[in-house]
Image (cartoon, rainbow, N blue to C red; front, side):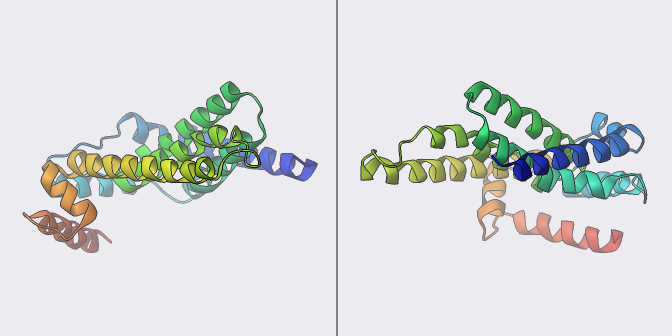
Amino acid sequence: MTQVGWLAIVFALAFSAFFYAKYFLYGPGLDLLLNFQLRFGSTTEAVTARSLAAQQVDYGQGAFGASIAAYVFLPFTAVALALILKSPVLSYASTITLGAMSLAYMLQIYQKAPVAFSLITYLAILLVPRLKRVNWFSSSRWKLQRKPIVIAVVLAVFSTLVGVGLYVVNFGLSYGQALEAFWGPDIDGASQHRGLLVSRLSRLA
């Protein structure tokens, strides 16, 4: 990697460290993380908890910078390190460490979508070292075609499991309702839960 690439990684890590320290140590981030809750008995409880958590965040606490770090800079750094590090152990360790940092921010939001985003993103990044070991020039055509297919299937199955699981945990839906809410169209009352969520959010906005 060029010197510019390393400077970009250093900048991303420095940016993330600064705003994470500001938000989690001097802002409400750590308290929200320590008291986070994803499991609720109903949509009403989930929306109320999110609203109360959002009221603790104010301007100048580093929340916006921490969100940029969690959504952009940390995943970017994880991908870059997964590509340049020759040791699989170091590659996996860096991905897991940066993933845990991103997940920490996602958890204290008290929402299911950011958590799912973080888990799926870093699972995909964990697959990078396996792709690096493929000999793209000497491998057979079937092997080259099989790798993307297998990765796509793994990510699709994992995404479905995470999405359905978070619906069950976060909103207290049954597995059937969660599956329908995830894939749609909604049946058996899942749409009512979603409609209640939208109406509640509009009142709290």
